[in-house]
Image (tube, rainbow, N blue to C red; front, side):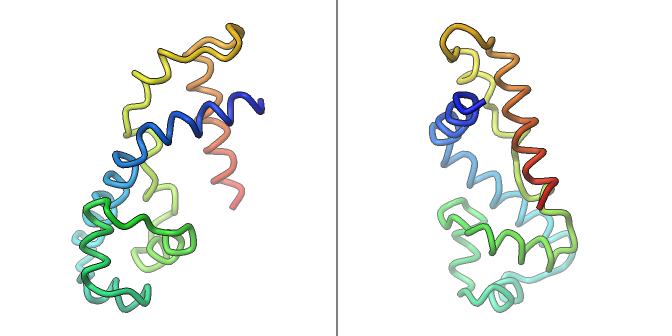
Length: 122
């Protein structure tokens, strides 16, 4: 299990820019859908409007407490802000095997299950 978690985080680091761009895109979409301005979101988070612009473009990496606050303001579950299934990990996962024991498909499924279990527990 420890190898699986390490490998998952390694994969995420390979896609970190894409990961944060997707978070920003999701936040922007939900914010606009709910009619919340960038200024209102910035004030709620104690940030500047420019920080929100950068967040929505993936250049500002929100902290975990900021993600919780954003979810609260937009009245969504925190899971809806995280692009775990959307960031295209499959290509990198297919290249990785842990000690030749765990297949790529099993690794992906178990890693995603671990992340989802953790997020459900918060």
